[in-house]
Image (cartoon, rainbow, N blue to C red; front, side):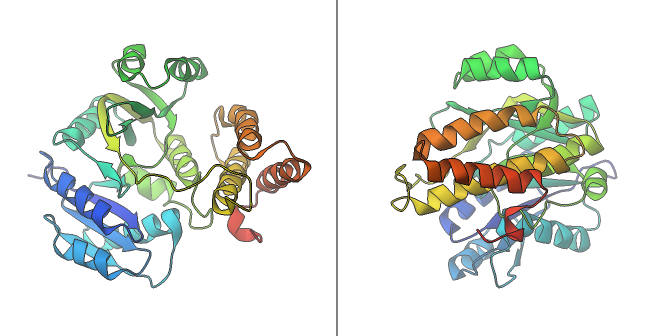
Length: 305
């Protein structure tokens, strides 16, 4: 029994009780079932409390009384998990809009042991099975090959069927062993989402080897985006979020202990920002402002957004 892993899931959520209930059900279906889920309610929201109360697995609900953001909420949950469950061996960072198949956690844990890594992430697919995202390879050549196959899951898996060393990943699903979490430190609470998951996973991969597991394809099924894609003011919220992402990526490039080839993505994200909102002087200045602040080592929470 001493070798049996004890996994605690960490969830940061805000006014998405139906998605949270769906996630908790999928966690309960695991052949390697989590010991518990620690949930940070960034509302607070009575419906979230009700979802936690009716969870099919044990939960600990945290209500900080304000929105800590994704990173802050996960850091808050992680500290509570380490205190409440001192025997835990692994922490599962999981988005409330993710859905796991019953064998996913067992496969990820087995792959961690096989490759002697401190963190591991799966491929992400949409509800229809189309590839959404792969963990970023440490190899730039492999990363470019993944971009070429687009949403073809079969083709992506064929590029590296046994898995590969991971540089970073986005945040819907990430399994981390306890010692790596403690040595790397928790997610940052000052990056206001959008890119904070990249920064955290880069820190993890700098602390201990990290792995991507293609045989596991976790479903990432968020609600339909409500953004219009129009320039501000018609789509001010989307404009601001994109700006925060740009600043966070630039910030990570200069602060990460091992940024790998992340700087190579800055020009592409700049083009995507201008294609989305228009090649206007105001937007070009906003792009320059965001990248400059990030490269100076300032996350968005340190400035007026």
